[in-house]
Image (cartoon, rainbow, N blue to C red; front, side):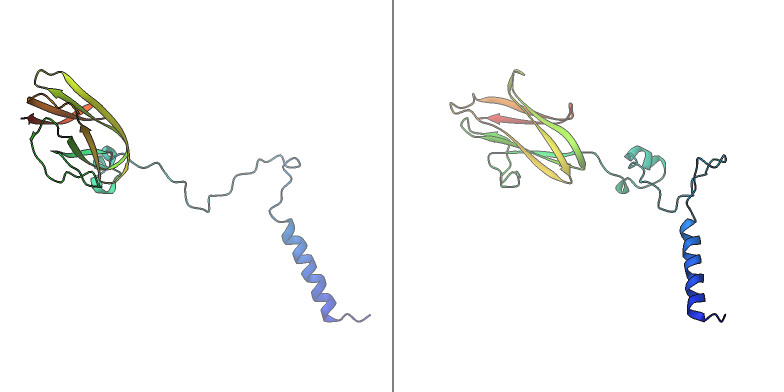
Length: 174
């Protein structure tokens, strides 16, 4: 009997497909040798971001590391713009003024920023805190006002970040 090429090629192709489809499939119950896992072909899992202290110790510039929220500055005034920036700073106010403390922070993360306003006797006039979820520079405004007016005298505002005092500003009511 004479064999033609197309059936022979077809038979060889079918045998190759069957042989290749069986490759890689192992019946673990039939084998007593434990299978070893294949080497990782993909990129390794992401490691957690290093802390600023560990990057500095490793010789990496701190600018390459994620920075926690840090205090920048505080400014007092009687008006703020839409960005919470003081429009005209000052340290002396009228009894009926609304007084703002504009606090600049930078870095990223969650932090608690607080303002404690007190009079010349150290008595707390007002306290306020705000939770920041920062991803860069941010300005936060705190304010006090008293419709009947503040008594003349010297006052101050203490600013704290995560419970630690970072700034204090004195001002007066005249």
